[in-house]
Image (tube, rainbow, N blue to C red; front, side, top):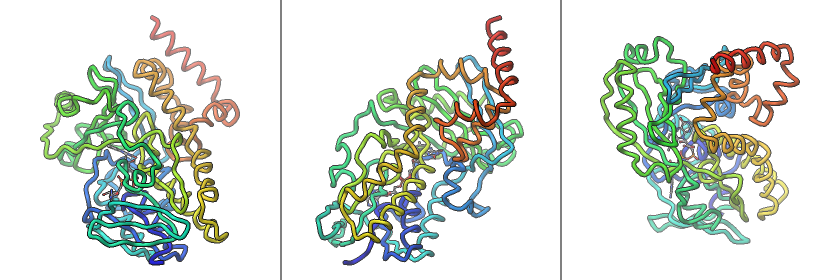
Length: 406
Ligand SMILES: Cc1cc2nc3c(=O)[nH]c(=O)nc-3n(C[C@H](O)[C@H](O)[C@H](O)COP(=O)(O)OP(=O)(O)OC[C@H]3O[C@@H](n4cnc5c(N)ncnc54)[C@H](O)[C@@H]3O)c2cc1C
């Protein structure tokens, strides 16, 4: 056998998987088709839930902004803001962040092969076989498919649908706009620690402004069927922001990518192989957030493989535990996000202003972003954990309801 474990794809999912494998002493190969550092279409907001997987350790120079709050804008020009005193995430440039993660895997003992494209994978009772574009063939005990939303591992193992169904998968376009430090401060009215989510004109989709040190990451995303005019919609969106933000937005490069989806519904394991991150479709179906889920799913996958190796069990039945653990960890979040997403922007614009600015709402937002609770725990937290705040919360909601009625 060439390796204990081969990981395909050196994004956050693959590099965390390779790190976890190498740390446990497995002979690990990390394969990446691009030359690193590579670009990735992404807003670059990493929720604290993901940073926990890194034991909270991200080099200072990679942190563009520390994030303490979220602001949701609505079509009528109003917005709702949730600010926490706790760190809820950071913004990064993906090329640098992902490079840090792959270097971390190598330092833990993984072997990294860049510029190495996988073109086919298969599994048998004896091993997993990985075919490379350069004609080489590699054999391993286990295979981890971390090769993103168009995963060749997933397709060649018949785990997920071959064709993209645009009604089920999302699509996004984004760009980093250089505005300088002063420009970031001006555009964020002096508070660059807030992620802003905005509606896109005439579309069932959303846009964002994520502040970095000297850049603003601006993008739009939505379900594929609503995003057919992606480029004009994106251009219209960022141009419409110039006046509001008071800064000149000079476009350098647009980046676009599909967003993964329906992860829990699909099959993510077979004999000797597991899919993680976007390859498994682990993306919040409402916001398209996927970095934290990518890292979390990889950690779970390696725990399960570790146990399978200890028990000398290489079959799908043993790995199925991964599916159950991911379901337990992510299902409620994805279901709740999908439900809220399906209700559309009008639902959010009715609900969020009633909670805006209230401490309980901000605390809950922070707990979810930090991975301390899932969406499904919200009613429990409201009812049991913070009962002292309930009267003031109800008063706040009623007051805002009465104000909007008048
Ligand atoms: C426009 C947009 C904005 C987004 N913004 C955010 C955000 O702000 N915050 C957030 O949390 N999420 C965001 N996401 C989602 C996030 O980018 C993904 O969920 C995340 O990158 C998933 O990580 P991953 O490691 O699973 O996959 P990826 O990051 O896609 O990494 C997969 C890796 O596999 C490699 N690969 C692919 N095929 C092969 C092959 N055949 N052989 C070898 N290597 C291969 C690729 O080159 C790549 O390096 C956004 C997505 C889009 C499209």
